[in-house]
Image 1: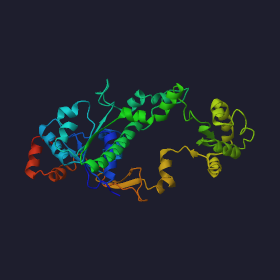
Image 2: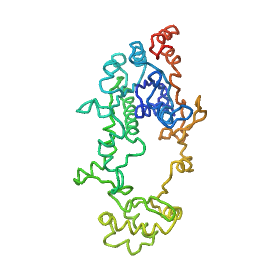
Image 3: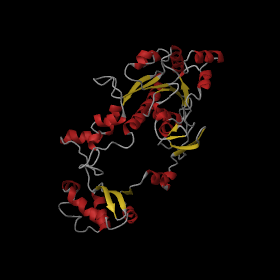
Image 4: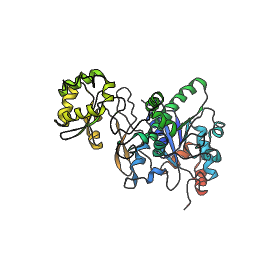
Length: 397
């Protein structure tokens, strides 16, 4: 299913949020042109780990697009950007505060060339307020938003999320906003300016902790794997390793007690309801832990799954990727990379009509499509040579 097959995207963003948003648009069929700085390209091209000089992080968020190198400090390169924007349906932009205006590639400038343009601006803290010009980085927004203060063990230090949830969620919010803007353009014929920020995304992820605080006045605290609203709902140590199990309602509580033989606990006044168990968290966790330690992880999974109870082994990433359930979802996309050969990547986490996810393009080499893109934009060979000689595509040897 390629509903965006006639849509053109000009991606002026870098790192994770914007590129991942563009990758998703490309998986739905959009033609995505990724503009990169000559020589170095997207910052993530230099991130570790590397395989034959290719960054794994870059690969993860740059399928489904073509690469064009432009030196945006060069006036002729900016002329190319404006021509491409005039032909585009969507522009993604993640420059620092004020940079787009200085370059003349801000929304107000580009919509004069293309009133149907959908312009998505990505920033760290939003463009208004005392931090409106500050750069945004995922872990800094985890810290700023209060998220980091809730993560880690109560008796230990803070723990950042091991990936980049703020960047990834910003990509998703941008993706959904762009799709909504495309629908609205179908009604009005006009484009739109939309903005996503890492700050808004971080607080959006904190939606129920925020409401819990507003209603109770109590700050969320670091609880390791435990849940503030329910218990038992955390990691426990089985005979041969850790596992997660949870009780999300009273029916599940009764089934857990039956499965574990906790007959003297199920109706005990200190544990009979979730409110009782939360009030006596340490005691009920200790009781459950004593039972979990008597069997292996697999023994408990077999028993608890049969009882319809939430539970899981705590997989390492390789174990998760090798699980037949992941294979059944057809989530991994494959493509042929010019340096690495066959590669796999996580595709768009939306599945249409039971089909496997598919990449339209492998991640591009830096400037791989310069000539192709410029010819499609209407530049003659002589004009392309002139751009190159002027340094618009990068330093002249």
